[in-house]
Image 1 (cartoon, rainbow, N blue to C red):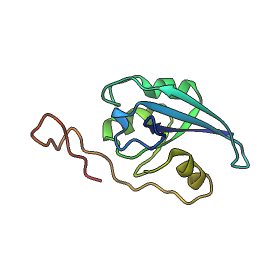
Image 2 (cartoon, rainbow, N blue to C red):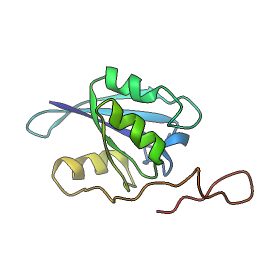
Image 3 (cartoon, rainbow, N blue to C red):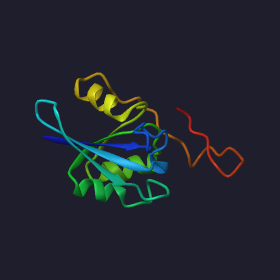
Image 4 (cartoon, rainbow, N blue to C red):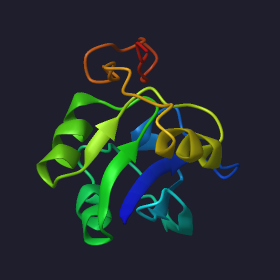
Length: 128
């Protein structure tokens, strides 16, 4: 059995930016790649690398994070507790989980450079 987390919006779409998501869906998947359960965890607001979400997900047994845009700091924090991050995911969370467990999703090797690329309006531009 494995547990896979996905940062999502209220409409169950993978959030384009890990640190801004509203919720995390945690999928419990059997050894036969069948989704057994979906748990929703409300996200803390703020930067993903400075929140305690990695610890919360680790305590839930999560070992894989399927994310859209995610910064290097958040990746490091998740990796430090043993959560592997698959970057570059987008679309409906349930469909992405199905694709991942059937081997159709792989890491894009691109991370969000939020702390390095600001857009001049108090926000940031992610390079995906």
